[in-house]
Image 1: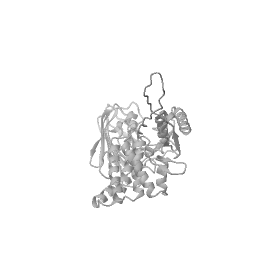
Image 2: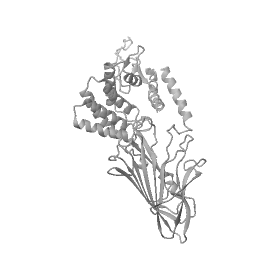
Image 3: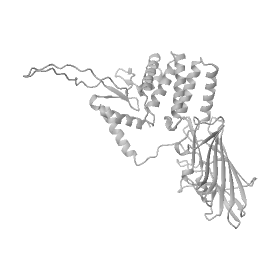
Image 4: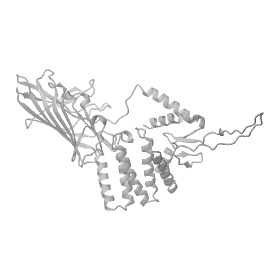
Length: 439
């Protein structure tokens, strides 16, 4: 109980000090793709159309080749000659200014040279970064076609299954009026779908067409709200998923292949910041696909401790670490059963010990009790109390007031905190604190 109180108080203090600063530690952001910018705020040139293709490469390190085509029209009566600009880099949030690679530009299908100039950074106005600046002449009522191309690196933690690419539309706000239309296409080296393109609410108006995910916008004023973030499953991970699906299709009795497929589905399901369950609509479907593969693996290989442990990790992490707060108690019970079986088969394995310390109840002698702490315990049977003789004797009975059985909740470091019956009201708060600390 003392440990639960200590964790709760520490968590509350941490939460209170956390409130003013909502930012979280994040990996350095790689430079984003971007729309064309204009230095002349009074220009009569309008961007009629913008077509962008972010072609993700099938490489171990997440990379993409970007081509962007812009149709520009001078809506005024006078010829305008100006310097058009395009951001080559931006602050990564860590004091560095990485740049896109292999930048090239064409005007009316002719390659033109550009200058590198330091100008205000597109993300942090107090900083400066390099922009490509090149001259363009816009004749009245004539369309000018500008094409840029460059290479991008994906942003994300190296150990995670997710990477992200960015495209900034707000740099096009300096042109006259609204942007007539924009088509942003994310092209993958395999079929694009909601499993490998991680859709968030603000970017879920998407159309899938073969290997492409496409977003269409019409007649809009570019702002930061229009800037795109494309989180995807890393191509190397998704390619592995394709390979494992082919292997189990060719040999459905291969327990190792089913285990690897379950593990890869689990990586895709947990392809989010710091490895928590995804929050998009595909998360629960990926979880079920991983469960199915793992269940076939342990059925074919009942004595393989690590596949039991991997299955347990899926069940316990998804139901205890899910941001949506949905807990399947049956899956939790199964997860503890799988973890217990893994521990019985290989009690010295480091991964299994790590999972047991994280999720199970560790005893003073170093052994573990594998029990779902969220499962309701049966009410104690009523006990008859001794009767007392009175002027009007009557039979009375009352339930015993014995305390609940002690339970324990794992904390972040694997230590265990006993909970007595009098502190039962602290359990939901302590669990929330524990989950917050893990995040």
